[in-house]
Image 1 (cartoon, rainbow, N blue to C red):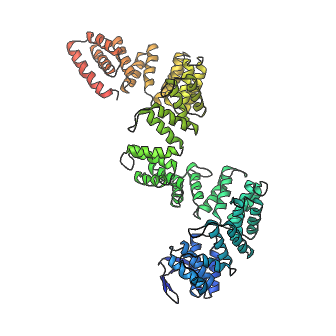
Image 2 (image 1 turned 30 degrees about the vertical axis):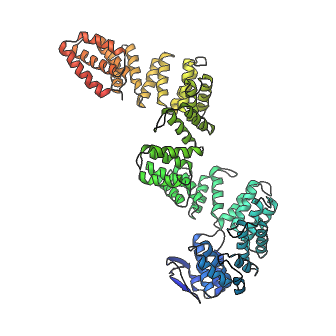
Image 3 (image 1 turned 45 degrees about the vertical axis):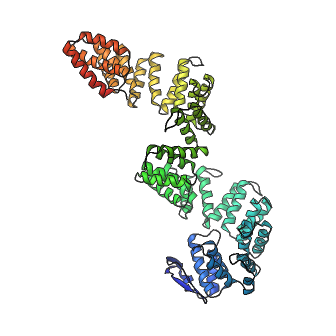
Amino acid sequence: MLKRLALAFLMTSSCAFFVQAEDIDIPTELHAMTSAQAQFEFALQHDQHSSSKKDDQIAFYGYLMAAEQGHKQAAFNLAYFYENGIATEKNLNKALFWYKKSASDKIVADNNDQYNFLPYYLAAAQQDYAYAQYRLAYLYQEGTNKQDIDIKQAIYWYEKAATLGYVNAMNSLGYLYETNKEIGPDYNTAFFWYQKAANLGDSIAQYNLGLMFQYGKGRDVDYLQAIQWYQKSAEQGYADAMFRIAYQYDIGKNVPQDYQLAIQWYTKAAELDNPDCQYNLALMYEYGKGTDIDFTKAFYWYKKAAENGDLDAMNSVGYAYEVGEGTKENYEAALYWYSKSATQGEAKAQFNLGLMYQYGRGTNINPNKALLWYTLSAKQNYPRALFKLGYLYENGDLGLVQDYKRAFYYYSKAADVGESASKNNLGYLYENGFGVKEDLSLALYWYQQAANENDSVAQYNLGLFYQFGKLVDKNKNLALYWYKKSADNGYIYATTAIGDLYSTDFHNQNEAIKWYMKAIEQGETSSANQLGVIYQDKKDYVKALYWYQQGAESKDRIAQYNLASLLYYQNKKEYKLIEAYAWAYTAEQNGDKDATELLKLIGKKLSTEGREQAKLRGLDYYLKYKNE
């Protein structure tokens, strides 16, 4: 049972200490206890190295209740909580007060620096108080601004505490022998201490023992033993062990892959506020691993992980707000979370923040800030940021002067970390001699590298090499192979290229029509002109005119010219000639040089009145269908 208390202050024999008023859940049994020793022991049970915030809070009030009754060990523990801000605000004056309560006046008199608490640690430790020995050892292990690191002293006091059966000290000895370069690594000794604490039920030592078995430290690799120790630790509520078990089932490493078991363990640890498990649980829901895709649940757990400080999760929350996935679209919130993650050094978030500033999402467009964040991300070798900078320099965008050499530099760095689009763009630079000496063999090499990684543009470019025999023998079958790979990966220009290949190289117009139609469905409007050409060759002028019209209205100047030409040669009626003239004029204004001669031919066939009508219509069409 829990009883909710609102504690405002507690009195000591010499002064009153204000305790911030807040509703807290205090177990009923603690509230009912009158014995200082019972209060202290109850608090100590909740003061473990794997304790939760709630446990720390219960321990704090248990120590406070016992210390108020003069319990010296409780006073020491309470002082430690105040010194380090555990379950309360850090307060050195209160820490000093309770350290004094825990020690003799003689020891206090020897302390010239009132905030140097080492003498109090030593006094309590020398009284064979294991908790104080453990805390003293940790102080020597980590050092402070008043005490240098002293590993030998840390070992000494940890061993003293371990001899008294303090399992936290045993685990800490294992950790020191495993990781500290001054005394190790000594995996056998580390294993000894982990095992000793683990056999006494310490959940963190059980977890650490699992790690020793998993990675073969001090023993041969034994995945079964590792899982068993993780299981023991997890069953005691240790979230990191739950994460290990969940992750093993998630990726199917050392155990059969089982997404449902992974979700179960991720959920247990996530509910204990473990940010790693919260993040991975969100991934399970986002990608539908072991469950239906559920963006709302994914967002919920990303948000939880982000609030617990996970930088990747902050970035994911930003993305969810940006695109409205699992929550309402909110650019301002996206900017907030990207910024929170980016300012702490997360490369993906820095890149995404750059995009927000480049395109003015949730803020004003700011090219300088966009470049700043892209650059910071690129310094961490984030592939998309490296590619972005290469692209900006190649095209002279965001106020940068076009610089092919800088583009080549960034594309090269991106290619080194596996960014496939950059490999394609390196091929393009080599093919055209931009920023480097023209080299078709290197162009082909980079196109092939990117194509093998399923980059659709590189697959298309490779198809061009084989279709037109650039450096390689012409091979329409290989060209078709790479165009189809590209089209399957969504590159619509490859769909048109397949139509062209069937039309001109395979002379299979029916197959060409099928691919041109597919391209048009995908939004590639130049294929309409190609269909017009095929139907004109078939002398199906109705369909030819229809497809030329579709292309012309899609602002394709070649289709505009072909439409004008077919209208002129197939029909001499003046209203048709007026239409032909208008399209020829539009094509000419859009840059088709052949349209100028066609205009002269059509103009000669028009009456004076018809010519004036044609000019007005041509101007109207051009304004409507001009290339932007």
